[in-house]
Image (cartoon, rainbow, N blue to C red):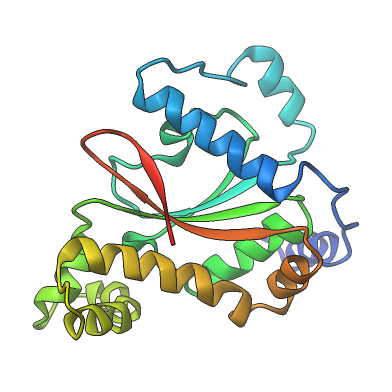
Length: 213
């Protein structure tokens, strides 16, 4: 890409108008959970997947929610929450971790696209969290995935329930809690009541998502 074209893209992002307010954080979360209830029951609606919807969102997007998910092929957020084109802004890295690039993407989804809820979605039998619990040397760059998960694993290993399930919940909980701490943009929206950040867990067997307190 030529330098002038790249500069134009970055400039348009940096000076874009803030998104108009969308639905409330509580309404956005309720919409996601209602979609998951349909999915878990096998009664999916497949909303916003028509030709008309494709034409509509081609002109611009306004997702109501952000899902921070794992790369695991069994946990696609649009399917798990029964949503369609333009509904959910997604970042996915193994272990549901958030590096700086992912955090910047999340900030953009909130600041410029108007998403009002962020769900950090861990899942049953997560391989990345399991690898962090087992320890040892990992090949290639896999260690870069495991490293951010280690604080949650260490905390759980010192607790009364040092299980993989507990570590998965703790990792999602810590990731969610840390987002606003790492981002002035997200912190500002939370304090203004425009954004809610929650941790959740997806059950591979039942298809249900439950909030992690």
